[in-house]
Length: 241
Image 1 (spheres, rainbow, N blue to C red):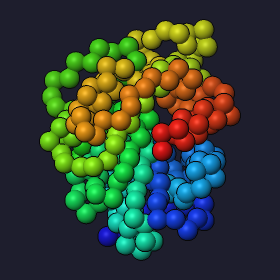
Image 2: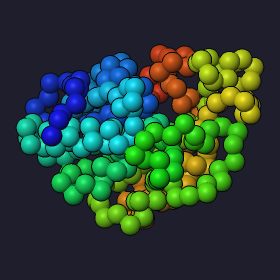
Image 3: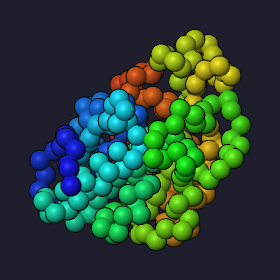
Image 4: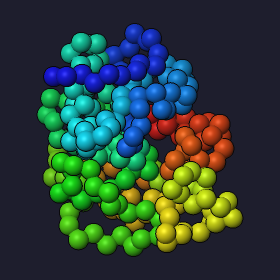
């Protein structure tokens, strides 16, 4: 076991720990502002680790890092219960951790914030193609969320779609006047049908809420009014954990 470098927000002596799993390119420090506030709000320790970069930036590597961090907390920190929050590409590793029998019974809840969905075949790497904004959701192969259909676990899974379109980040829709539109050549928001498909893969006994929120964009840490985004995401997470 190689434990990834991580941050711990909070110094609470509690047997419940929250792990935040970020998206592609997110460092362990990237979400520090909302995670510090979340820790204080819930009075729980919140852990974060980095999505690897370069040739190691694959779903498989993040799955392994999440598993190793979970085992470390369970074995070395006397944690008895795990709550996981994930966003964007972090949803893949947060899905596959439920298949690890050393861990799954300790996970009580997973909160999927605007998950990015991919083909199951692409999990060993990290593909460049996913469903965003304007595209029709017409999968030709199994999506990774379908592994949940046959899995046996106890956690409750909540899925939240951020329906506010991005507009100010590089590579996204640039003009605020186009925020209300889906632009065929640019990424504006995650495809609603793809996120609903992921939610529908969750077994009935594990289904939490599916919610669409209109006050958060996918890139909430760099798009629009960041301070408002942080307030909104902390309130949202606190209400579901």
